[in-house]
Image 1 (cartoon, rainbow, N blue to C red):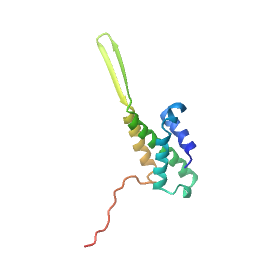
Image 2: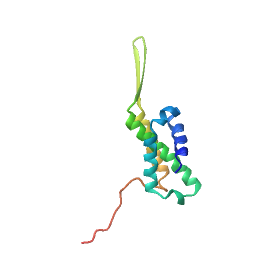
Image 3: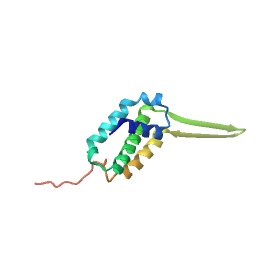
Image 4: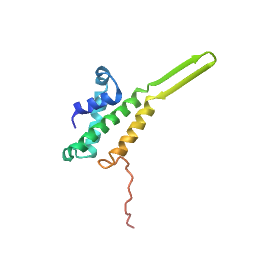
Length: 120
């Protein structure tokens, strides 16, 4: 899997600048290796490969959000009315990752649950 393609998708998903992304290259590379350990990337047709690259970028963004632990909170007060909105980057990234897992389920199964026959 091409690191450039994953970084380009990571930039798209995360809206981070290249300077910030460069600090997280090792996390992105680890995610690429994780995906490559799960599936033979060379045997995939182009359309599945592209989906997998995007999913890898989303997974890297999710890992970035876990490590970065940044919360964005916005507060607005007008007179006696105060509105506080708190959205965690982790929550957003987790939702994105869950959706990507569903969309690439035909390529990789990340749910390591299976039934096996047990002999007595």
